[in-house]
Image 1 (tube, rainbow, N blue to C red):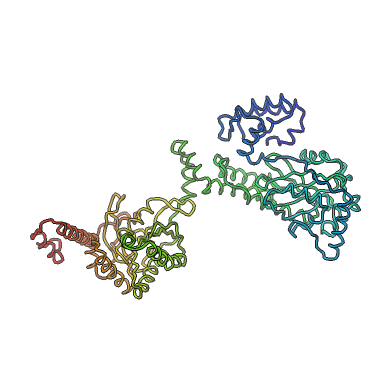
Image 2: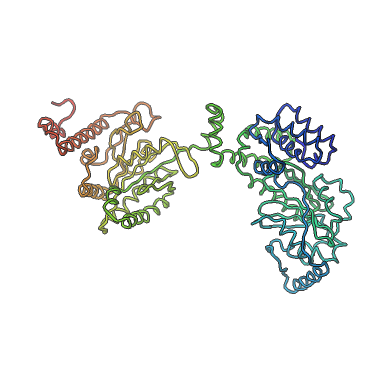
Length: 637
């Protein structure tokens, strides 16, 4: 374990230089050693500073190295605190009140507030009721505390240290710690052996002339130790410990009280002699807050948490650490692992992978494990929206979109879908369950059918759904599975829902489907099996409405239209033959190939008609063959 900052500061100059030389000769370059060397750059001894500068230069090849060349001491301090937040405001500090109110006047004011509190059981003051003790302090002490708290920081809990049973009225806010009559009882002169405490606490003690009480304060951001000097002086020594810096919490029974020992990245912090109820509550709260405060940083990227967890398990099995410490350290490691592979660190992880030239198998496995999963992706769009938008006023277009969203977005939420993005009239939605996505699509089309029956303004959509492995970043998803879902939507006719074979397989026959053959899909090496969800007679109603709409808008039939019109009742999916592990491309079957042939001929008819309309000569032989096609089967002439 590396030396803590206060322990380093307590050494003589020669000893500090020796400690730095020990870092210089160490076989490995640890981050905590580097931080200690940075701390030593501001040592009062010049020789120590020069040695620290030499030592920091040895870390130039490490990822956490900070180049301070040419910076002034003030610039160095700012850059260090920006790069390493745990270095900011470290260590004991002295806070003083610069007010001019005489002590006797403040005493009289406190006495008046005390009498009022006795009658109302409430103290006037700026702090929340959960920390009523702070409101029961003298005005200069309150001003010092307000000076210590950062902007927006809220105190949440407070208790006195060095607890004695006689302090009960003060702990409960019935009396003020700052009342002159209480100083004899509360003052800490009875603490004779201060050497029992770590150097940081001793440094706080030396900053004041005669400490009279210690308050331990929890805010929403950190732990604060507040050591009040005697009441003739308006000052206090204090030290703040951000929750994320706490790496270890331990407690012990001391003369009927509970004392806590905290280890931070820089130091050991002693919380002496609390009332048992306060000590146990503080122990539990600090563990919880220190874990929840861990956030993603690039410093976590190089840590192998699987290895660290395995080492911790070995220590626990070997009874080298108690169960309470084992659970705390395990939960910290698990939280850090989550933060390492969080969205906030994703860009840094990918950059690290790129810099490592293919990243290494281990890193790739970890990234894929944390950021990929199977999702069902749905794409929808309004048929003919662009043409409608060109023909209508902007306000009419926006009204159409608003009506569309108002009808469909609640249905998406009802079936567990998560709207990823809206692109004009198009929706991109992800689902955890393929069947829920399909049912959602059916419900969306049914809602629009009901709307179109009574509305002069028709809204028709087509829907494409695919299930596959996606890469998740925040709420967004990426990957080939997303692209294929978009292609299914573009293939679908108005009022229809097209599925890939993968989604069809996950659906497991829960909803009726019609097989639509094998389709060429952009970006895919081989044609893909396509299915359409089939509803009730309303399904046909929507398709007919779509045909009328296309004719009204002057839109050409798509390549699949001829086959879809004659597809008839629900067709069974092709029987799986060959490799069953590749559901996205089913094995060829007689029915499947015939359906695909029908689609191809339908496309040929559509293209032929379009060419004639554009001025191409008619071909009687071809037209006769196409007209006779429905009666021709393979093997017949």
